[in-house]
Length: 51
Image 1 (tube, rainbow, N blue to C red):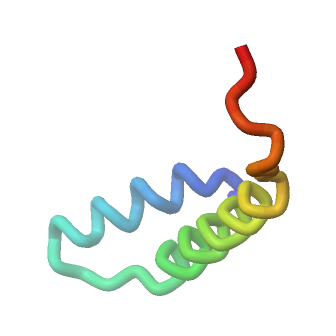
Image 2 (cartoon, one colour):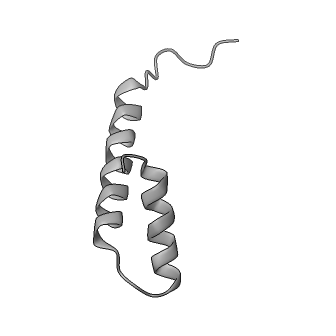
C-alpha cells in the first residue's frame, strides 16, 4: 500500500485502457513531490564534484 512504484504501475496500466485511476494518480503525485523536495533539500551545490 505504501510502495509508490506499485501505484505508478497501476497508473500506467489504467492509462493503457484509457481509464482514470484517481487514487493512483494522487499517491504517485504525492510521492514524486515528496521525493523531489527531499532531493532538492539535500542537494548542496557548493560541494561540487570531488574526485
